[in-house]
Image (cartoon, rainbow, N blue to C red; front, top):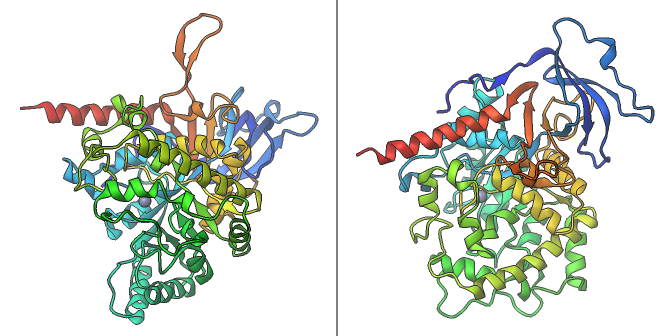
Length: 497
Ligand SMILES: [Zn+2]
């Protein structure tokens, strides 16, 4: 269990004012400022200034017990939504320790993530829901949580599938995550979830993608597809099944991920009629694509992922061990990874990114999810990397930020409350010392390496200053100091005889 909130946070306040900020509100509007954002309790009650005259309310005084943050020179964004997250994974336990929730929560918040959708509740549904409730009560240092329960692959009948959905709803799950199963079971569970007002997410695993691809599940009413599997398969023109080598074995993860890198090129070509019709139908169905580009990135450059500059201070030793090649741990598949595998994946990315960018341009909803905790990807850091990868896919940084905020909120059905900085919404904010629209790298917890033009010294910028969730102000520098301490303690404990 995560410990109670400590001195890394304050509030909520009767009245909190963030003055002199440049605002990027998440709706797609360009940066504007200076503005003053007035918050009472957990809600934004006023946004002043930022109009053509540039006047703002700082001089008039805010009243005695108002907490004021001077955000002069700072940018303010809506809190980020990580649409594909895991509050730990049991595979870390296999490598020495069960994931520490305090560590994960603080890394998320320190990177501006104020809401996470835990897809699968792998640490246990009851445990995950308990953390969700404690976070909602403001008792622990954590983002807001939305929890999807993992649909079991083996079920006897559609009636049993529907009963299972009712049972997890009763326990408090917000949604269901699918990996695959017989079509009649998926369909029954999907209908039941919709009847109960629950959300659905689906990673179309290759074991059942031949029977249900993305178009099939989207037509059943699925809310979001995770990653990308099932999308090329929905656009096969000259085959029904992926071109597996004849000695392929799905349980051998180097086979699985190596061949996945050769999948997009088997689908209909970009811009083809099939490609365009698929996009059109998915947009029409109000479907969400949650690509999680970042989690596959090691496949196109394993050395970069393995030696990322934050591992030294921020990666738990048991997590790093779980990432190392190991046939028994999911996602740790680089047994004998080759240049050819990486080149295939680089080409795979070009096609995949083009689809996602085309989908966005056609009006489709794209969200930002990280899937961190696997494949050398660390909580929080992987999220910022996902922002960079969406920009690489062709998104304008403001389009990226809308995906990270308002689109995520829409996917969760929470856009009335969160996802943009607007009067009446919850006070979920990221306050940054620099301009993240100009460079997402400033959002990394390690800051951004930059040569100071005046002193000629190489140094790190300081990035995010505060993160606000439900009017509670979290100090990023303290959050990260705590994380470094947790990692150092774990390392020291391991080196004890
Ligand atoms: Zn996942």
